[in-house]
Picture 1 (cartoon, rainbow, N blue to C red):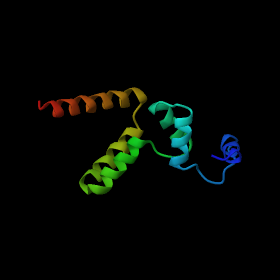
Picture 2: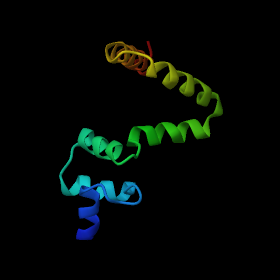
Picture 3: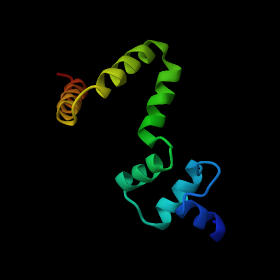
Picture 4: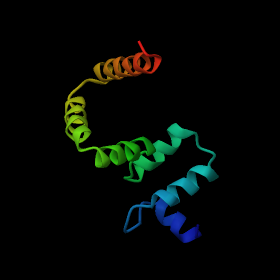
Length: 101
């Protein structure tokens, strides 16, 4: 990465958002964990890897599209505690399904 680009990035003087590839390179250079990489992506106005996967699934399965849209829309109105409670419930349900219960 060119030093002038990095300087513009650091000082918020870019005309466009950095690409995912650029963010990936920065996260590798800084030895970021997944959470830190996601913070970099979100700060750069990009989506996380998880959201990319969701978008791919939704684009390939129209039946899931409406449900995901409703889920995300409803989740926006939840408090952080309620959202965490909901996520834990969904994770528990997925665990049960995978275990064949």
